Image (cartoon, rainbow, N blue to C red; front, side, top):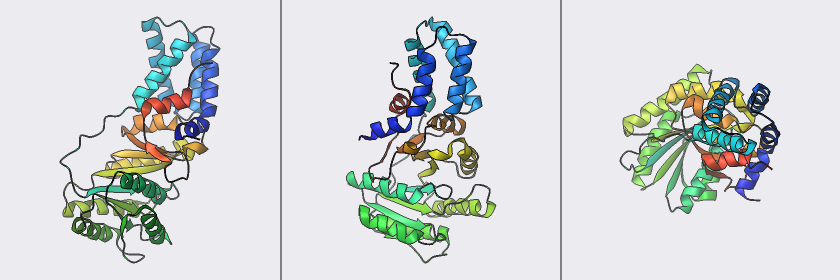
Length: 301
């Protein structure tokens, strides 16, 4: 089964529910719009965002003189794809190493995601290094070491309980000395409301910038799709503290609530850069807004 097929399977419930509402519409009236808004909320887009989408859909249907369910469905997909299309920050001068800091709460799959990113980079011929800045979770350093061996990445670590910022600083030295193209820092999972742990992330960023003012060049938050809107407060806190440059949404094969991607992109105004739909090493792919919406909605029967 292809990546796109697995994504469609994961989002099939959303697609079936919304397609049936639009496809059976006899008229674009308040009953139609109310049912569609409920379906969008159920897809985990969120009430405020769903209300906004419906308002824009109404306006576009009227202004464009749309009269058929098929036209309305296509318009809905275009609106949602536009919401998911975020302008990425313009790249600065090429940095070597390009430094990526990966963050998130416990259990979202940060280390596995890092391994998958490295696999893709290695296929492009890039020299990759992992830095084990998760020095607290039992087994975290060894887990990252295994991924380094599996992907052919270089690996640096200190002892368990070491200062995470120190690990990052030393890794910068090692990456430069070894001619590494991309340095990826794994960090300990932490809840967004744990002030000391969030401050530690801020310290890692501060120390990296002492070494290289432009680093880290990317700060990526990994989000578990199965947590849906419940992860919004977490994401907002990480963004406020660190200034995220991108989101990675994993486990989309295990949820029917694909609309959370739309809510996160719009609320945080941060682009989704990658999505995952499984455990295999190649199950993390670059995010394509139009393809995602197509998987989520498909065509009317």
